[in-house]
Length: 237
Ligand code: C5P
Image (cartoon, rainbow, N blue to C red; front, side, top):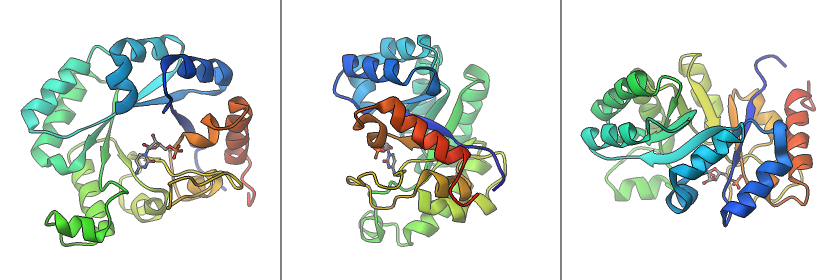
């Protein structure tokens, strides 16, 4: 197998800061990236983002911004002083918003990779149709991923099963970030479209977002290391 080894991003979806701190301590230097989502950001705020960054981690702030272009840009200006390595926004905010956000990021957050969310994996064809989008989820993902990358967005969040579709058609420098990762033998939980770390690597992922397989493990460091070992020595290599 060739290609880069994807980095693991820990989705820090935990009940409070103390639990977050103990997981970060347990995983230590083996963990490079941490995803902070709406639940944690709204509860613990920018100070917690700084705390995580000060502990040596890179922060993926998963706020999924979606508003009129001016408001999205102002929101990004409010975030610009934070140490954020990745930030999500919704591709369906449209080309003007995506272009303007790219400009703001280039100017104020040059070290932050903007990631576009295409179709939420909770949306199926019926749900898309209910909001007036009468195409398959796959076609909508393709459309929005192309729109986002043409607008200068540097990465796409996608389900593992979309990797094989998107990787060949998107520019090589566009990063693909995928949740829904389940090492063999771990519980799927509510995730339906899942892939093992090795398969996600083979399909072209650049970053794997992993939450419960690490968080719910009695030894989070061992769980992280097992994933990293699988990534660097895939079973079919
Ligand atoms: O615990 P688990 O590994 O399923 O966590 C996956 C993380 O990725 C969670 O933070 C979840 O909100 C996020 N996510 C997802 N599916 C998407 C987009 C984001 O599971 N389509």
